[in-house]
Image (cartoon, rainbow, N blue to C red; front, side, top):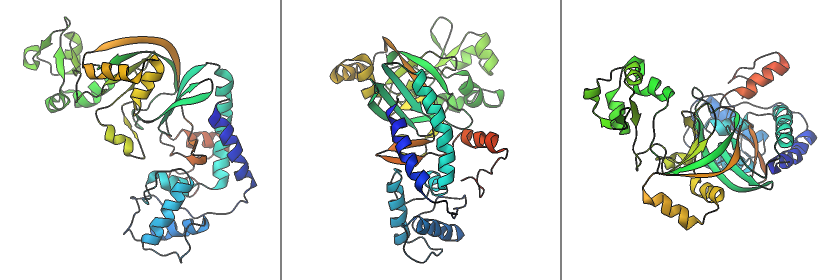
Length: 358
C-alpha cells in the first residue's frame, strides 16, 4: 500500500465524525487580498468564521485580521501560506465535509486499485492536480518534487509508462502540437516565435539551413522538405539541463526547465503536456545511483549525452486529495475530471463556480 493512501484513510475518519452543516461559499472572481473589498470579502469572512479562523463581525473590507485568518486556514490545510485567496485557496474554502467525503470515496477506490496492481520495488508517481512527483523505493518516498503539468487544453495524459534513460544537456524539437498551435499559428510560419525560441532549421542530413533558403511557409512545407526545428542546448533551452525519456505514444516526458521561478506558483498547469521537474538533479541521482557530484559534472559539461537506466515505471495519476505535512489538502480539479465523475454518480452536473461545486 502506498503510504499516502494509509494517511488519507486515517484522515477520512475525522471527516466521518464531523456533523453535517451548511457552509458559505466564496464566489468566483479575482484573487482576494489585503485591501480588497466587496460582497466576496463578506462571504470570505463568514466562511472563515464558520471554520473558526475569524473572530470579528464579518464585513466587506479585507484588512490585517482577515489576512491573518486566511493564513491560518492555509496553514491548516497544507497550502502555501501567503494570505491571498487565489483559486486554490478558494477551492478548499468552498468544500464542505460531505463533498470531501464524496471525493475521497472515489479516489480511495482508485488508489486501492493502483496499490494492488503496482508491485514494483521502484516507481514514480506524478499526481497531476497536486503538481507533485514522488519516487518510491520499497514503499518509501525517496524523492519528492514540485512539478509543472499540462494546461487544460494540452493536458498531461493519465498513463503508465517507463523511464528508460536520461539526456544531459538535451536539444529540443517542438512536437506537432506546438508546431501547429504556436510556430505555424493559423497555418502560417511565425518568424518572431521562431526567433524568440532560438530555433534552428535542420534538414534531412542534419545540417542547419536558413529559413529563406528552405522557403518554409507552412507546416506542410516543413514535412515535405524533410525539415525539423531544433533548439540547441543552453540556458534558453525549454528542457533545461536534463530530460528523462519515457516510453509512451504521447511524446510526453519529464524534464528540467529554463524557467524555474514558475515552481513558486501555487497553480502550475501551464505546460504543453510534458512534466517539468523542480528537483531533477535529485531524481537523476536516485535513478542512476551515481554520486551527486558526478551528476553535476555531467550537467555542467554542456555536451549532449544519453545515459540508459534500468526501466522504472512512471504513473501519472489524477488524485485531488493529498496529504502534506500530515494535513489533508484538496487540489483544484484542473481538468474537471472529478466534476464529471460526480455527474455520473449523481446524474446532475454541478456548475463549476456555482453553489454545489466550488
